[in-house]
Every structure is written in C-alpha cells, then in structure tokens.
Image 1 (cartoon, one colour):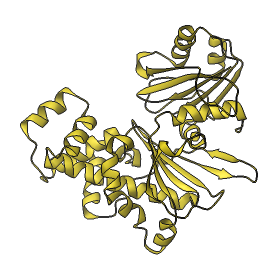
Image 2 (cartoon, rainbow, N blue to C red; image 1 turned 135 degrees about the vertical axis):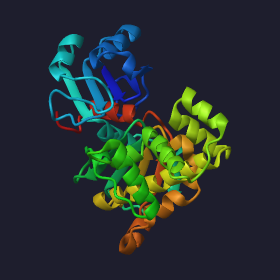
Image 3 (tube, rainbow, N blue to C red; image 1 turned 60 degrees about the horizontal axis):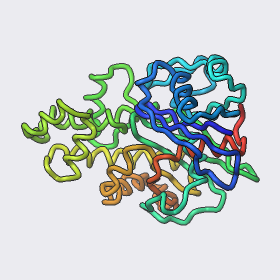
Length: 329
C-alpha cells in the first residue's frame, strides 16, 4: 500500500493507492489545509488515522529542493527531516520528490478530458516535456526521455530573476524591487501573491481607479481571488488590466521554460490558478507572449501547449513514482 502526497503551500492532497501500474484510482483521498498542521508528520499521521490503514511506502511531492536536509519549503513554516518522518510514521520506505517533478510524472497518467489545448502544435514522440504551475508559488519542472522511460526533472526555476520586456513590465519590476529589495523572481510575479502585486502596481502608477466595493472585498478576502473574479466578470477595469498583464507574463515565462527544455513533447500549464482563469488563457494573450521569442518563434509554434484541469496531477504523479520507482531515492 502506498501513501502518496502532493504537499502545497496552501493545501495538500494525500491518497492511499494500491501498487497497481494499471490503475491510479485512490483507495482513499483527503485534502488538508497545510498550515493547520505544525509539521508534515502530524498531517500524514492524521490521514493514516482517518483511513485506518498503515501504508508500506510513502511518496511525497514537496515544494522545495529535496536534496538539502533539513528541507525548508519556501511557502510553508515547516522544517522536514526525512528520518524524523520515517520514525514518526513507522514507515522506512520513504521517497521525496520536488513537487513539480511529481506533477510532471502525473502528466503521464492524465486523460484527454483532464487537459485543455491552447496550441495543438506538432508533438515529437518521446520529446522533452515542460511543466509549470502557478499557485501559492511558481513551480517549474519537466520530463526527459532516457531511451525506455520518462524521467522527471526537478528545478526551482520559479526563483530565477524576473526579466521585463516592455516599459510597463519594467515599471512593474521597479515597483517590486522597491517592495522586495534583494531579488525579484518570476514567482513574485506569477503566483497568487504576484497577481495582487501587479494590481497594486497598476493602482499606484495611476493606471486605473479602484471602486469602493472592490476595496472592501480586497480587505475582507483573498486578494488574488477577489481580483481574478472581478476581472473575469468584467466588473472593474483595474482588475481586468491586472489579470491581463498576469496572463501575458505567465505566457512569457512558459515560453522561456519551453525553450530551455526544448519541449518538443509539449508544455503543460498546471497549478491551482490556471483552471480558474481558463477563459483568459484561451483568449490569446497567453499564447502571444509564449510565442514572442524572435527567431525561435517557429520552434515554439510546433510545441503543444495544454492546461492541466485535473488538480490531482501532483498526487497522481507521486503515486506513479510509488508504483514504478522511476526516481532515485
């Protein structure tokens, strides 16, 4: 029995799976608010108590580099020591993956209904696959064919330096530099918090008026959710501008990753934000920014681009690794 998990900065999915390479349907599944638990082991222990079964193997996607112990997720106040997790749960067989590495493996389990095609492209069989996912943070990873199977590529690409390509984006960079001082990463821009920062920048630079009702909702709720809902409903011009810029920047970074990995097998846009703004992603500005790479435009036009609609891709990927043991311990 395998306990698989997709650990996120906001929420985590845990599932119990049989070791069956033909079926990744969870025998039991739960969703947890990550910060409601003081550490990883306590959340896992709660799941085991609830399902009433002791797994023999534990495979988790973690939003952090997993080769540095103790592991310190950027968007969670946890310190993860694999040996302590093993001891607390009495499970010796533990495999930790970077969260986007797990999501990348999850791509291999998805069905056509789990995906929305933004660009059909001309996929190359066994070509490299790029995966990026915006949510609480920005994760980036991929898959590389090694001759007989795909191997997941982990990275912390979301933390590389944000690079503006227009006067407007340069103004956003300066605004964020003043706010964050030492480093403005792509994650600062393409994430839930990033959307809120983009909105703040547009407001502060006089590019729109904030309606009183929107100010009240922003103070009372999650800013990214409030802004995106207002934008999708067309209720506030400032929110529309913020989401439009966010989508364009998302497309630009997706194109960056596609070129870095030469993702001839496809680019997959995962994470919690993409399905919620699907209409905006389909509207055109995402792909326009994705393709705007000068002399390499034709190479990008051939790459399929798909939005992952299944929010359990990371969980399924962890289960996939638990069954196939396709990564190193």
